[in-house]
View (cartoon, rainbow, N blue to C red):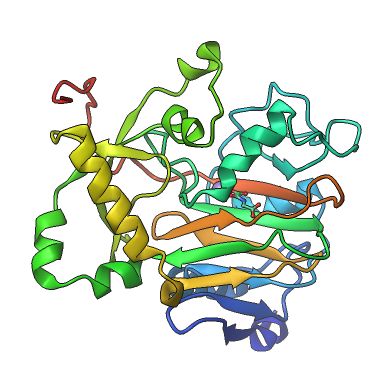
Length: 302
Ligand code: OGA
Ligand code: MN
């Protein structure tokens, strides 16, 4: 369909990254030429915004599968209003479609999304991409912010970069949820043991280097915990300063996809007691661990 190819329009949303894509209906099967252009744009811009998409769960899954196999939601045993394990319910609704009490376990768990993070960095093979579709959006608040970790790497002084090469961070969702006062149930915690991730990654499609960190990153392997934590905090502040951040104000029907290998994101608060915010996420699995196997339990911690 050369017409569809010709109509695909890209508009940059930020000096470093993020672009809006118009002229494509993601609910329909895409031919390889159109998909190839979307994939190229994704690799270059790292965040793509597709406005006005009318997607149900099946169609969102079908489009997401073009990028690779999908992850399954780790908290799918909690009652939610989605029907497929490939869909994460990012909403403040219960399984009956009623607004959750902010004290409800599901609401408190989802509040962890308001810390800067990269999806599934607490998994041995972390996610490649996430696709978030807005069904209902609040009249104010509830934006999502993105930070470009490639630009952060590029902005570091050369000597600083050399000191970071080869470092490995331990990531844990039990740790990151603890930061917001959410105590992970012990039976669930054993299913998500800490993992190691490279602190500096190279993008397989573009060769660009980037930092890799976020709320799940607890400390640096082989360094005293407090020292590693201070380093991660400093780098996170550097990487998320306003000049490197794109803030997305949602319109119902937006599908935003981002590259978890080189972008951080966080949700912003809204009045959860007054307004519904209903988003559906699919997550494309990564293609391997970021550090060599095997991952032994950490011995160096002091
Ligand atoms: C996510 C996420 C933030 C938001 O879906 O992975 O972190 O703004 N969402 O809902
Ligand atoms: Mn997320």
